[in-house]
Amino acid sequence: MLTPHLSIPLDRDSEEPIYRQLIRHVRSQIESGTLPAGTRLPASRDLARQLNISRISVVNAYAELRAEGYLSAHAGRGTFVSGGRETAATAVPTPVNGSARLNGHTDVIGNTYPDRSLRELMRMARRPGVINFSTGAPPSEFFPVGHLREAINSVLDRDGSEALAYEVPEGYAPLRASVRDYVSALGIQCSADNVLITGGTQQAIDLVVQAILSEGDLLVTETPTYVGMIDIARTRRVRVYGLGMDDDGLRLDMLENVILEHHPRLIYVMPSFQNPTGRIMPLHRRRQLLNLAHEYRVPILEDGVYHEFRFEGEAYPPLKALDEHGIVIHASGFTKNLLPGLRIGYLISDGVHHERLVRVKQAADISTPGLNQRALHWMLEHGVLAAQMERNIRELRRRRDIALAAARRYLPPGSKWEKPLGGLYLWVELPKSGPTVAELYIQAVQTGVAYALGNLFYSNGSGSYHMRINFGAQKPADIEEGFKRLGRAWRELACDYPEIEKSPLL
Image (cartoon, rainbow, N blue to C red):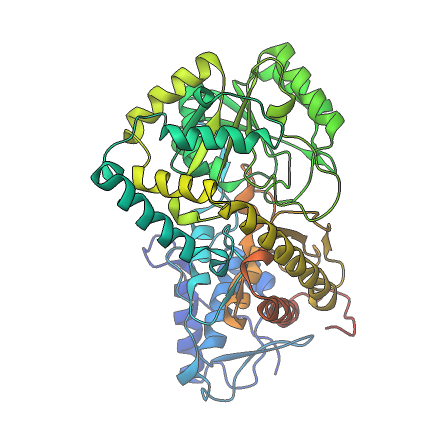
């Protein structure tokens, strides 16, 4: 049956989201017989253009109507009114709070951030049965629960109520000494007095932003960058200058001009296994970055949380290990490589920066919980971390290889990615002839798989065709199945894109 010109009156001033209005009108026309079984509906982009609404609103509406049994999609043919609602009883609805627009919004200080509706979409990954590649955490089966239990019991037996009292803002002194010894193996030479214990690496980064930047100051980051830094900058009302990357990381040929023209107060980088791209900054560029920062007296915040997650390739020292002028503040922690929920991170800094950071830390929360600090110290002293890291790296490399093979097997032709030499993530670019990752997301969750939307890692709303996949978070069988579901979701949605050249995989 020919594609109709749908008559859908939308109330743009209503509190009901546009995509919910669209669902209601199409459902009503199907139930009344205005749209009989077998009717082919307009492609999502055509209907969006016809109604002058965002395309993802149409994609979301079609996805929910398919889940309810009103519509069916056929690869290469289009979306049709179903003959009946026999699948509605077992279908899973897909509510999204608010209109799922693709374009970002601009806040009061001029930076564009991903639309809140993208965050709402990410919540759908929590549904039962969804293989969730969207997280930033290691798998729970890696956690040394038995060792933690032994550590807590030992600490309580040894220290009693003292373990539950406030610690000094700098952190539990024996743990600070253990961190000093730990980072010395990475090439970072410091004293325990240079170490500040924090509530995870996220708090460590936030403390640096608060200590160095004021409202309206400029922060330079890689782009794409860690979404947590974007969130912190937005909360602290700091402007972000996202500087492009090449295969070797941050573009230093552009950085000097940015410093001269815009006078940033801080440079944030993740030189080893960058989140989300997985790229590594080689040694010569690390030295160049340090020289440039020293010349213009711009401090560097180094996020080293993935530094030790190396599967292969050359091991480079952290920036802090190469720092001869105290220009680098090194942030890391034990959230990725040991126990995320313990929330223990640390900062290593020199002189005036350290004093300021301690004051900000004390104002923020007085101190990181003492029992957690003492338990972690016990585990470090008993070699738990070393044994854990060896096992984790071996298993993460295996999962990386399974993910790469599955990506080649199931992702659509024209997809691009780089082989990560470490870390947790595969950064994938989908072909631009098909749906964006936000448009695909509803269909993917309906198919039982979720990923992190690429837009979230850009401060300017870019990344519409990129996704971050945490291969480390899933067991091998689920990695294979997850990529299979992802490929199927893309193919089912691709029928709405006539410009896609059909291949045998479609």
